[in-house]
Image (cartoon, rainbow, N blue to C red):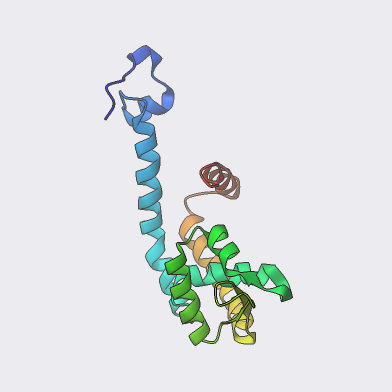
Length: 163
């Protein structure tokens, strides 16, 4: 912890709300609240997706990004960068999704190092089924806590934390 602190008269309203003497504690609060929020919503959200054939919430993100790429598919390396998933984790998800019939992959001719991912008909169908459930779960869980403008504000703030 930092030894920096500010006198009561210099404390911001936010620091006063949290009763923080050290202004650097704000960064710790952001991190802990992001983690706690993720844990709060993750279980319900992941169960909804599992009930409809998506083994992990990351599967929805993967299907969504491949769908956005259109008929040319999505390079696995681009997907890794876009979703901020470690390569080993993305590879594991892709293998499981391929086995489940949701996606297919093609290897580019320079060996097996570059892969292009495509949705199968089943993947496209599942994406259409899951979207309203995905959105409905988020709305059910977050709607009572945030109005639409607050949700956009929070999304805008969180975007600043991403590359």
